[in-house]
Image 1: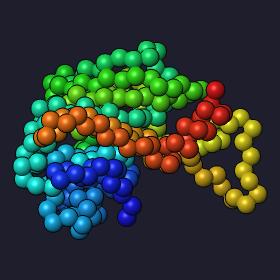
Image 2 (image 1 turned 90 degrees about the horizontal axis):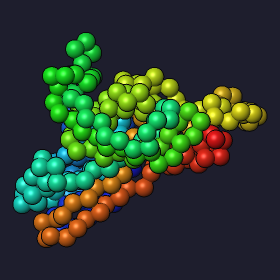
Image 3 (image 1 turned 30 degrees about the horizontal axis):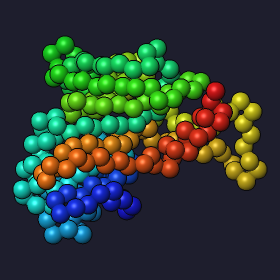
Amino acid sequence: MKFEIIHEDDDIVVFSKPTGLLSIPDRYNDTIPCLYHEAAKKYEKLFIVHRLDKDTSGLICFAKNEESHKYMSQLFEGRDVEKYYLAIVNGRPIKASGSIIAPIAEHPNWKGRMSVQKKGRFAHTDYVVEKMWNGFSLMKLRIFTGRTHQIRVHMQHLGHSIVGDPFYGNGSKLMLSSIKKKFKLSEKEEEERPLLDRLALHAHQLKFINAKGEAMDIQAPLPKDMSVTIKQLDKWGV
């Protein structure tokens, strides 16, 4: 199971989690593979600070001692960590930047899904459009709250669901044939392989002041599948 250490010091270790892997143990079945269990094999002690959705790739931080666990947990709970994500979304937003402030609660009809509801919990997401192509956009998002599926729900609310999202979008795989007009399958291939066959959401950056008073700026580069997709969109999606 591949996961990369992006940053490590005496107090914390920050991994780049692959898509499809739980970040922390499943509450009903702790035999399902998760990053915490895999990482704990290498460390004497490891404390959970926050979590990422299974389908989201990118940065996740664990504490290495009780003092750091208390400090980092307070930072995350007190919204003193700047959390930035990159997402490839469907369509082209009208505004190049903006704020989405829309309360989120459990969906009344779909178990395990969330939706924007008046009686939901306060949720705030800022976005900036980094690139636009024909039918798709790359967005940088900052979340100020940590609601379940927040970015995915807010992108659906904005009318620009994240590519590959089966809950809040159409779940379609992104194929090169959908962006390259004169696409031809190579003779070696029987069927086209997707450029992207997962949720196109990546936890890209964490910024905070650590327990020693040092400014931390930790970044995880885009996974290969997302970076290849962006290169192909740059080439053919204009």
